[in-house]
Image (cartoon, rainbow, N blue to C red):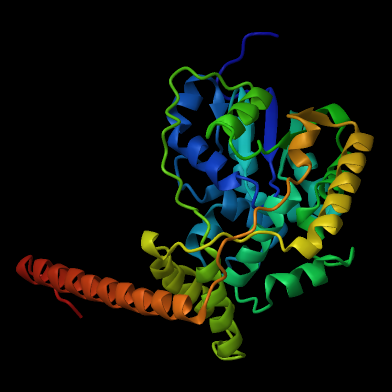
Length: 362
C-alpha cells in the first residue's frame, strides 16, 4: 500500500451499527475517551472535534430525520457532514451508533454509496438473548412502555414484532449483505458473564486493527442498568400516567432524563431483571435459529458461538414487594428534591455573578 497524505480518502470505513443493548455505549465511551490516541494510530472518528454526540446526530439524519427536529446541533452535524469529514481523513474512519441498525434498504444503499469508494466494513455486536431481551424490555419501559416483562415477551414471540427489525442480527445484516461482501460484515459476540471487563473492547479492537498502546481503558460506565424494582416502579408509573404528557419530548425530558436520574441512586439497586423460566425454551430455540442464520450468512465471526447460547437464568431469591417499591419511590422523591434545590442554588449563584459583572438576570 502506498504512502498516504492528509486529505486522501481513508483506506477503510468501519460502521459499528449495534445491535442496541449489546455494549455499544461502553465501546463508544472508550472510542471518544481515546480519540486523540486513536488518531495517532490513524483511526479517525468523523466530527469528533465538534461533539461526542456527532455520530448519533448524523445517524439520525440518515435513518430518522425527525428524531432531533429543531435541535441546532443536529441540524449542523448531519450525515452529509460526517461523510465529508470521513472522505477528508486518511487511514481508517470509524463511526459508531446503534441507530444505524434500523437503516432501511434504501438508507443502507445511500450510506454505502456516500462512503464509496473507500472499503466499507460493518460491525455488529450480538449478545445472548437471555441477557439481551431483559435490556430491550428495560429500555422500552424507560421510554414509556407499560407492559410487564412477560407481556413484552409474548409480543416479541411473534416474528413480525417490529422491534426485531433492529434487534435481530441476521435481519439487520441481510440489508447490508445486499451491498457488501460477507467478509466485510463482522459479527462480534458479546463475551459471557465472568469475562474480563475489557473483553468486548478487545474483540472490537481486533476487528478494526486498533493497538493497545496509548489507550486508557479505565473509563467509568455511565449507562448502567436499573434494578428490577426500579423498572417495576417506572412501569407502574407509566401505566398510571396513561395518555397524559402526550408529547414524547416532554416525557423524555421529565422522566427519561429526570426521574430516571433519581432512580439511579446506588442504594436503590434492588434485584436483577432475568428471563422468566417459562420463556427459557423459546429463547433457546430462537438463539439456535439466530446462530444458524448467522452461519449461513458466512460473515466474519469473532468469539464463540456458545457465547450466543443462553445460559440458564439464575432465579432471584426474593420478589419485589410493594414495600420495596414504596421505599424506592420515597428515596427517588428525596433525591429529586435535593437535586432541584441544588439547581436552584446554582441559579442564584449565577445570578449574583451576573449582577456583579454588570449584567442583568432577566
